[in-house]
Amino acid sequence: MSEGIISELEENLQLNFPTSYKWFLKNYGSGGMYGIEVLGFVNGKATVVDQTKDYRRYFNLPKGPAMPRPFAWRKTAFNHF
Image (cartoon, rainbow, N blue to C red; front, side):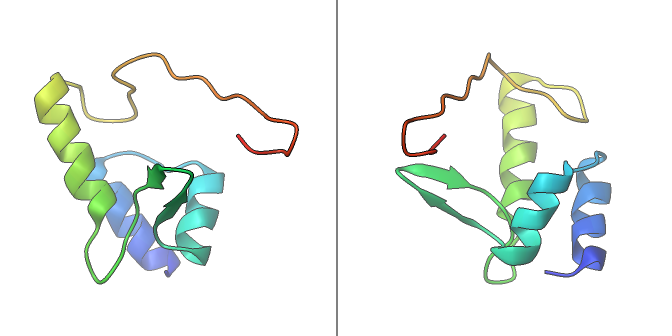
């Protein structure tokens, strides 16, 4: 995925993606593992935009970065998060 498409996604959502997420989009576009899906851009469709807008409506979230509930990461012995 190009920088131009990433910029369009950011403009559409009115936010700036973290550098790590931009790297993910450039290298994978979309995907997941261990039952956790990371939304992105696949088959010409920006799932991250659609789902973010749906969550904003459903949870009555403001525009920009937001999390509807607390979120935690845990690192395992195998360096999985």
